[in-house]
Image 1 (cartoon, helix red, strand yellow):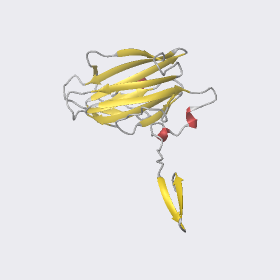
Image 2: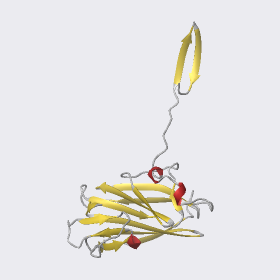
Image 3: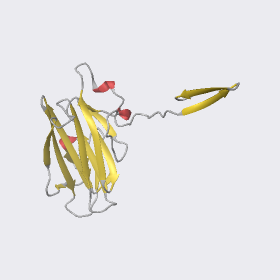
Image 4: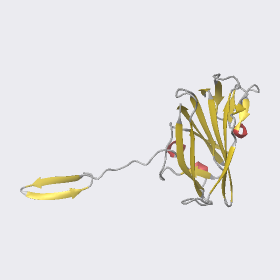
Length: 194
């Protein structure tokens, strides 16, 4: 929950040939008026306005920024296929201190791939299982660039099999160090962590 000037909403739908992504930027009709946003699950009072299929709510009835929504098709660019796509979104609000919420509604039975580069996010996300799909919500102040890969689940995989806290966590990098060890006048060379 939080107050933001802009909501950058990405809704993705998959079919057997790829993924269609619709991006919408929302703001209040009164310039500079922040809305209180909610993205967690639960019952909401009827005075809130729903967006992104009811996965994002706001105290203000927001308007779409001119030029949006934008719809694009993914799955046939280099490195992508119908089961693996890269999401790349960025937004530059008018002021570098404008608070922005980025809300992603991933396709049914798709999960992020934290082990694939690039993985660029402005903050740790709030990831929620919504039936057979995930939502991921990031917050930022000013401009933000978001890049990550998503993949279709294998037939036997379930969303419940994943640690939601690790879906946008970069794998830990191990460094290899060259070390020398002298033992009774004999020089030993070792690679790797000791």
